[in-house]
Image 1 (tube, rainbow, N blue to C red):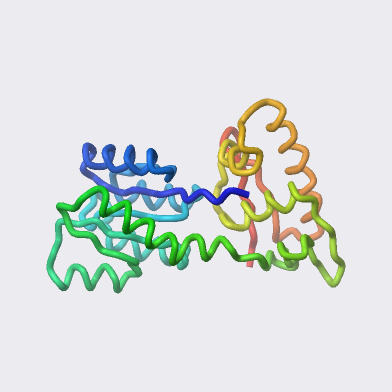
Image 2 (cartoon, rainbow, N blue to C red):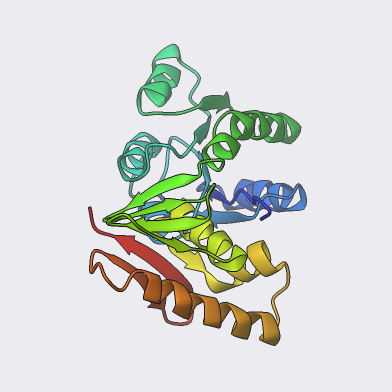
Length: 229
């Protein structure tokens, strides 16, 4: 399964934001632009993102607070600050709230890309290589292709395996239907969509014995693997 890194870009300068978003998309990073802190937090809590780039000064919720809130929700997600603040105190504060890098404005767009790449290699791609997940009373072992509960193993097909990896990557967050089709079937069309529906139904049956695990259908958007712990 192809590993795609999806970025949440938070920048209140609309022109700069669109330039950065367009550049990152061209370079192969699907990117969503948010113009204020509260909107960004809401998006992060409800959508699937692997990486966050954010300014320190934002409307409604400043970048430092936003970064801290994001880290409370997902401590593994990498964060890169882009900021006009250049003092040692500002930079230190960025790292204190969990930043992986801090880039001061003005900066070269190529430099941003290189730094994002470097952080991805250290963090995101390493995390995506995880193969075993605990899902309430179930253990999903991706190496052995099995789902285990109370010592009973259920062998998984390749499609079930790929979908479960995807849902586990974004546990408790929405995975868009189009994203799942592109990641696993590599093409979004009617036949692949119907095929995916079959496997979604199979995965739901796999978790029917534990109410603490549920694969929700988010109407018109996608799916969310909800795990109560």
